[in-house]
Length: 124
Image (cartoon, rainbow, N blue to C red):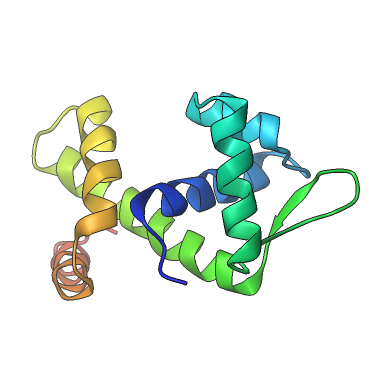
């Protein structure tokens, strides 16, 4: 199943919330992203059917290995791109917002080049 940008955003949100809390529920995702409960419920169902998350009997959400792989990739992109943009003079709020958009569309090749450049400059 190919994930669209919205699916990646939900997976990243689950990843971030999991790092802060021992458990994640749909309501937590809804509050974190500012999305309606029905929208989150639909997305969670799609992610479950796609094999990216599991939901236990109490409604707690956990990323599968496939979900963790996507989450780590997107989160790495977000953090590195945010830092890179800040380092070249973009204010942190704008850098984070822009990184959130860029992280979903940048090619693996372009991201790898930015990562290499940042590492060479001692940015990471």
